[in-house]
Length: 262
Image 1: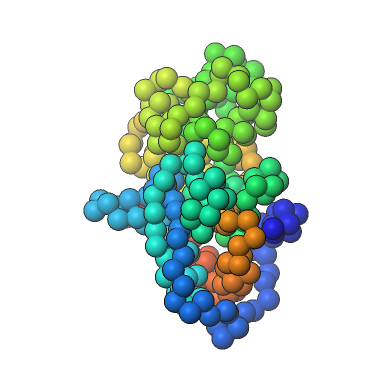
Image 2: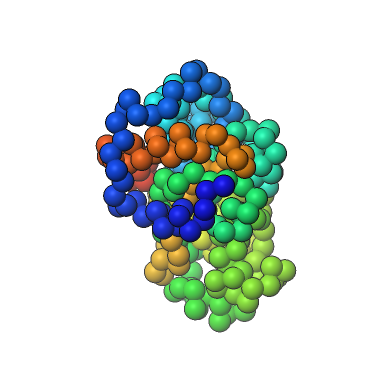
């Protein structure tokens, strides 16, 4: 298992990595890698107008596989079973904007982080009560929406509220999109979203949402692997190469900034 301290220490995108020449990467000899995602976390993984899976995580995993001489077979599943399905070996790798945490690292292996994202409040456009974490915590009438079991859920509970996972101020939903729509409908008052996701919802529905406050926290994101997977070292070597070449920064810039502007 990759040590969590090493993962967190390497979370920043600006981390310098030793150059890795293409010929130094392992050759997986055409191996088929079974990957799984949810298609519900813009701009990391989502479906285009034709129903095709696209996003940063698709690009990264597909590029890594190409450089390792492997083939990716993509599958879809719900978030609430994703970690367990990879842990038990049903799939080889999972990609769903998964925050690297010490608790998760006790049951699943992670690759090195491929990005670190800043998290913010996303609220209704006419919301005036919420200016940041402190104002949200102090107003007991305010409700938070989150997808159960995600980092947003735990951030709301442990970083903003009282640490009680049964706190009635946190309402859970089957998907992040459903939580966002609950904000719009007035069923809850806020969700936590990274800046790109927030910008995406704001742009897609003008006048419905706004982002408020300073960054609540930074989350290093990685891909999950079956414990003891022999894919960890090859994937990390390929990620180092993508980072060193600037390929990773270019795709992050595209999906987080350029794509949203199209």
